[in-house]
Image (spheres, rainbow, N blue to C red):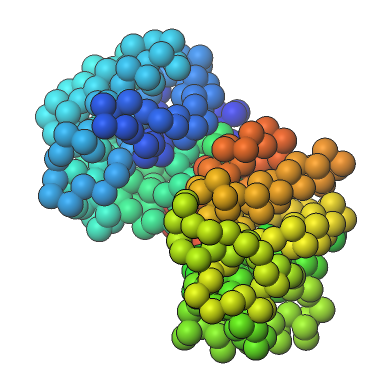
Length: 397
């Protein structure tokens, strides 16, 4: 049993770092509450034990202190409805009102603190700020995997003010770490990693780290054309990082030396401009005409990639195959999501991590057909790059 599950929170004030950085529309209505719903079991466990909960989170990127659009007060009503209990709110996170409300919190009650990033000290990892936050609770619970890669006051510094038995991961963090470890340390072979997105520069480290673990690496999205150029292909007006062509060549060479198969898209869906109303055609990815650009993988690539995925026992997906936000260029990403779902149904273990990949499985209704969908984009990426995440190290070391 996990440390969190076995801990009795009766009479304790649990200071829980959550990731409530959710999107809002112009009327301050939540458009995607996945990050909130993910933490509900953690919060309810504390309340069911007879403890009280103090929630703290960042929200957006406020530059000049407090701002209406970055206030966590807009989330209070929704959190209350999900928990089935009233959530109190304090318009500060370390001031007198926060201290008083935290002090008077009774078992079964929940308090939400105002946006931590209204203080610059949060992102600076300021010790004095972290100490003031720590004083509000008896037990520290980090359940914000999405910020685990940040050495911020509430994620990495605060833990030092709690005894080892009084700091722990929540259920979200536990499940995220377990899923990532399963991919990195216990992957059943064949292991296929699907890496997409716009830029090679964003994914160099993850590809390098996976060269020692994966059997297949499928590359799609805009970054595929830098690899195509490295192979001597003609890519028209497709996205290319000129300063990363040598890097792409080096990665292909390393993969060959390690016996890892790199799969580039045989063909592409091409367009005469980056627009929903563009003229569309198809071409082999290494012979794209001048003035045309690749914006999705083509039918042949979908077929090849699907076969590789179906033959896999472990699958990691990070990054889309094309500009799936536009209907004309969504088929490749949709085909990959479908193939992963089918492989999962046949016994493979699949993890989808990274904001765009998560958005894609949700958009195409495959989120419940894969093994695990990560809530942390940047954190999951850095985990697979082999980096130590400050928010994890603060609890485990």
